Image (cartoon, rainbow, N blue to C red):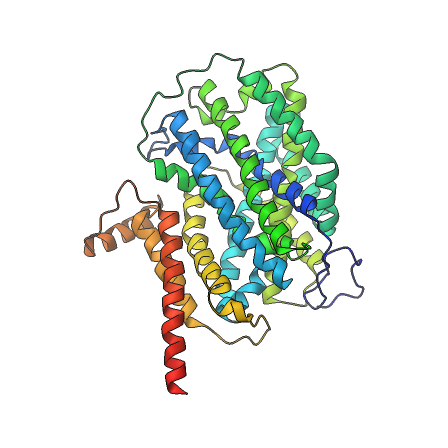
Amino acid sequence: MTSAVKARADEVPYTLDEPAPKVLGFWDQSAFWANLGVSLFAFSGAYTVLAPDADGRPTMSIMAGIVAMAVGTAIGGLMLGLAAAPGARTGQPAMVLLRGLFGARLSYVPTVLNIAQLIGWGTFELIVIADAARALWDGVPRWGYVVAAGVLTTALTIRPLGSVRLLRRYVTVAVLVALVYFYAQLLREPLPDLNHGSWGGFWTGADAALAVSISWVPVAADYTRHARSARGAFGAAAVGYSATQIIAYVLGLLALALVAGDSARVFDPFLHVTLGVLFFAVFVLREADQSFANVYSTAVSIQNLVPRADRRILSVALGVGITALALLLDIGDYAGFLSLIGSVFVPLLGVLAADFFLGSGRRGWDTGRAAPSRWTMIAAWAVGFAAYQLIYPGSIGWWTRLWTDIADALHFTPQSWMSASLLSFAVAAVAALVIGRVFRRVDRAAV
């Protein structure tokens, strides 16, 4: 399948056969990442940073959750910046970059996983948009809001760089005004004791916030390949995203405190203040940039498997697909979904950062369609993944039992101070450097 015409010079090419234009300046990128940092998930999913127990009840105080979220987000922002820089340097999208890390054929493994998680995120976004829109006005059935959000999402993916510039010019200002307004309103309300509760599960809460940032790591280069400089790409992603995610999550946690921790009512404090419906509508409409980013990056990821596929056709098909899924599913497994994302992509980033900045990437990666397989990097990724699971195996029944049994067999007991994200990142990075160096010495000895 080939494209009959070429894209505009200032737009994303239709296939991977065409070069990526370098047209996004620092402020374009900053606005893009800042908008992605403000999500309705920061409100509806704020309870996840309070380390909820098996029954969904928070185990941490609101203040502990705020600190854990800020720490996790700041670390996640730095990781996002590390993922953004290689795209700007090479001009390649994220999954094509992994040809250099793993080899062309082995890059299909993380590509398929990325496609699966992006479809999941895109579906969740449409569900959240529909639920929030019904909270604004329930005169339209849920399916109507889902379909409308799906159509808007698909339309934005047709001209993705134009959509990024649109965010900078108009949407960012409206979002910042809405955030300031809601802070002023919610802080006037009689808040309960924010220190009521414990600090137990701090790193579990931090990892939950970090996982939201990490969810963008495997797509960052899809956008920063159009950046004018690697330094600007790093700064825009790391600072722009972290700052607004912290602001949004604190607001979400304050709203959660006002409804006594009832996550099903977390939108109520926004809607019950003066002009709350108007300003909350800004968040609902802006949420489409999250679903847009997910659908567009899914299409670009598929192009790693089928380089000549037209991204416009892929985007339309994906938009229809996630709309159908959103009509059938709910958001009940959100926390488990986040932990699974983190366990896969945090160690992958550790391997990528180590090899790109300190290993063979310094001499330049082969990202061609015939790039040789690098099983050593797959092994390093697997080691980091195992480290994550041993520390925090998630909440999916049989999977949790499997890794708990493995930990018992190894006589390993996770400690409360252990962060699954930080330690798996470090383990994967060290494994990549050590394994890579050992095999380079073996290769030299053989020669």
